Image 1: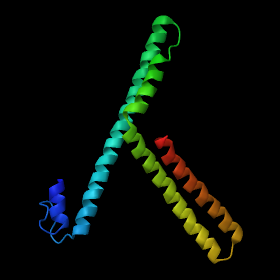
Image 2: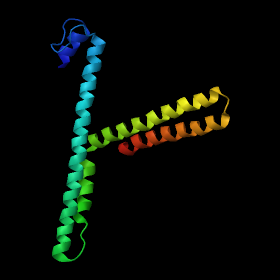
Image 3: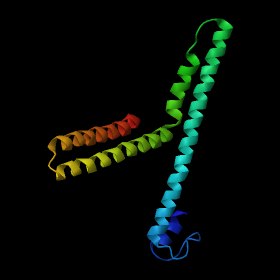
Image 4: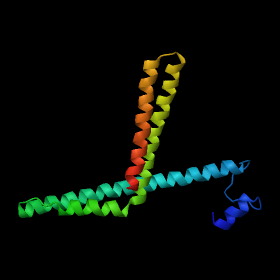
Length: 149
């Protein structure tokens, strides 16, 4: 959908051609965002695979150099690692966000358990679960920060 099409859709002047029968505007937008997120996840998975392939190639190159020269060269793998850090920042950010969301889901689960223990006045159990909430929340923040730095 192009910008002018989105403006017309949001102002109620037109409807997109791929809108389903009886689908509300909100349902349509949620579906389209979910489709976009699925495409991003697939691209991130492909990029992660390509990064692993590049590392494998660099390792194989170093192994071949060892066979020929009898000494270990790490230049190929080191150069590969540095290059991969610069060419895939969007993939790294997306994967870090997925990991952070997983940590936040665990924090939410631990928060529910904490509330359950509080409801039966088990302070010791509640403190343990609260510490897990804090740990998971901090870990999610570290995952996000690691990509930005």
